[in-house]
Length: 145
Image (cartoon, rainbow, N blue to C red; front, side, top):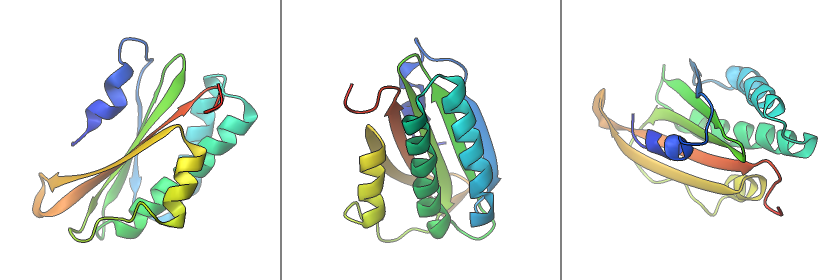
């Protein structure tokens, strides 16, 4: 899968990776948010940071669900480290216009996270399709630390 290295960049100081694979549908958002909040809570994030992670997950997953091809799976990878939580969310999407980084949703993600990146690559299972990966990092102490 493209750009998995983005999640693994802190491999020396990170704990195990948790991967969650669900149908790319809005009905799955509550499960993904709950898993994200549980991981952030287990890693001693403060309550405000946990809320930020939940909201960022909701926005990022919604962004990909809207663009996912029919029947696609959404893959969420969570990699906590001593200082932050790295999250990578991917889904097969139709090729076309790149999602706008000037949208309201993108501004929300920028406000909630400490770094964010969107990449697109050819889908190895469907050469006429793409895999879109949205990766973000949330520091334990927030961006003001």
